[in-house]
Amino acid sequence: MPNHRIKDIEIELLLLALKERWGYDFTGYARASLKRRMESLIEHSGMDCLSRLLPSVLYDVEAAQTAIDAISVPTSDFFRDPPVWRYIRHTLAEQLNSFPLINIWQVGCGHGQETYSLAILLHEIGLHKKARIVTTDINNAFLNHSKIGCWPKRNLEAWTQNYQLSGGQGDFNAYFDLDDDFLYIKDEFKTTIEFVQHNLALDNAFLETQFIICRNVLIYFGENLQKRVFEVFQESLERGGFLLLGRAESRPEDLVTIQLEEYEQTLRFYRKAIRGHYV
Amino acid sequence: MSKLLAIGFSAGGIPLTQTLLNALAPAYPLPIVVITHLPNYYDSGLIDLFNRVVALPVSMAFDKEPIHSGHVYFAPPDYHLLIERPGYFALSHDARVKAVRPSIDVFLKSAAEIYEKDLLAVILSGANSDGADGMATVKSLGGVTIVLDPLQTDFRTMPAAVLDAVDVDYVASLDDITALLQSVQES
Image 1: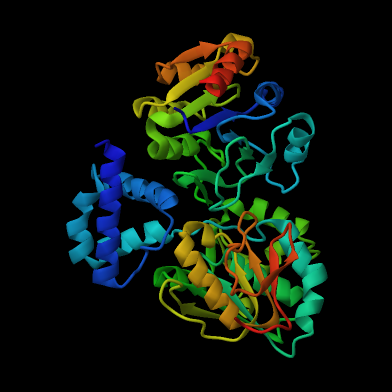
Image 2: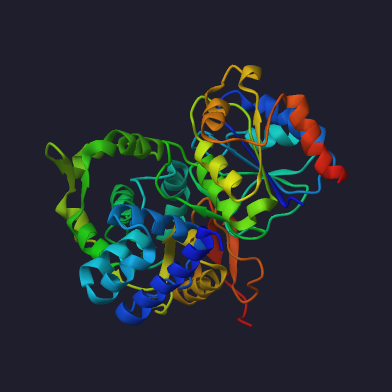
């Protein structure tokens, strides 16, 4: 048996350990990207194979957390994919404003760049008082990190450029306190956000929402888990509410029970049917 | 019998790839996956450009999309493209590899681990060494490795890096690569 197939077995063992021992269920994750993440976990651990990590993952909470972080590691930027933010700013804002209140569920908090991009945007378009942002992540460590709202400064230039391309007219730096190495989001943006641990593999809808943002989360999920997530979103969304996916993601075509219609195809905005009955 | 053809290139590879794909049109028995380094915007125009000049259908790959023979798929800009299981793509937004995303190395390794000996991989031209590690994996798992002769392009860093790293099956001119890939059609 070639080595890479032995690695596949080791991955299943590790997933079982994390699920049964620590309650983190990653078994519905797409294996191709998971395998790459496991390879970098092995590299950083200094071990030569994943199964040597198993004893510590089973008995040592810190080793388990390292593995959980490696699997759920987020990569994002402020105002990533500027055209999407420009569309929210110039077009979707009006639609959102037609709801009496706006609950926004941002899925996959990661290190918070997207969550705070949203908070900044809502502030600029004057919807911050009417809107409530709830951000969720499977990984509690990421939620705690995001509450602090602090990032290395090295990406500031790229993020400022994204902000400007997204139609931002203000001074991006003014939303942060800066020191030599880090930028810290100003407190006024933190108070508008609720940070909630939520596991899309197990937990249900917990909030009636008018807008769900779930970008580049589904790509890490296998097809069955993806279908479950769409059912959760459908349940959570009010009729006429919006769903935003990542640029290379789409709703599974064979999901006939999901009444989410394409709203803006290129940018991946969907809308829950305003009328119609559930099957 | 091969089940998937992967083509990787960077600088200088667009006209080469167009010539190659045109020679394989109008019908090809394998899916063709092209991994190249595109700018980070939706409408790089490359898909339209290829659809205008190539008779095979060309599109951007989507997450978990089923892979069809005779179709040309491009890795979407700013995502790594992977094979989830035989016949299905997957994407990831994980860190750049050798400063690029999509990475030719990432795709070739993933595809090689799924298709093993049934993968046909071609590296054309480019100004970095992306692809060399991936080709090593393709070779070690029994796939067929083909590299454009570095003397045939101004952007020889990429094919030369592959030749340094891997004892490839074929180093060939574009005409010979075309003939090799056409022979799949007949076999």
